[in-house]
Length: 228
Image (cartoon, rainbow, N blue to C red; front, side, top):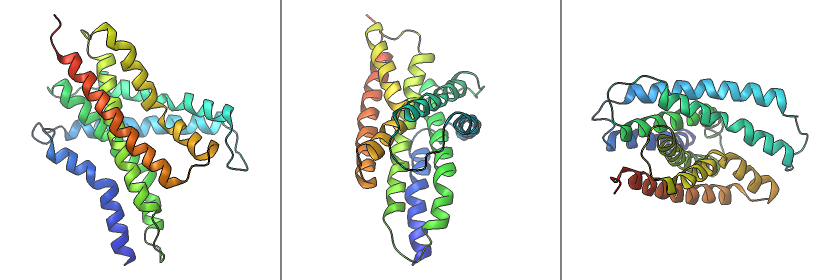
């Protein structure tokens, strides 16, 4: 039963990444190498963030919300945006379209995040003797992160690769990108500052990820229309 629970949670956590790759044109254009490169960039970015967090953040003895510490953590979290910029603009890829590039980069980014932050807790905890919903919720959180990562990659693609976008949409693109990039700090405030329980936070993440995906899709579509 414990092994069955572990595999269910693992499939829920990592399965959507494989499904997305197989069910979209990414598999037809063989963009796996692009996703692998993006995953490696994510790991390098995570290492830089870890060093910065260990250097500048104080270790708190309680789990209370500290505004200064959270603002500093949000600022350090923007290193992800720099890593995503590098993955989208500086790495060389085979001849793929902008549509496929941001999807492949976002997919690799989200998969690396899930492996780094969720594989070990799953392996240690989901095989326990007692059933718990925590690891199912972590799987749902990984799905929300997948959608948010692809949305951020799409917004980054519009910011850094799309030159002829409508000027009226530029502030909206940057605001949406800032919201997605600071989502970890937002959820931390909901959990520590407002006392939300984990299921409620995951529900918020799922709703927000779908909303940002819809907005990103609308912005991307609007920027692809020929200007008149």
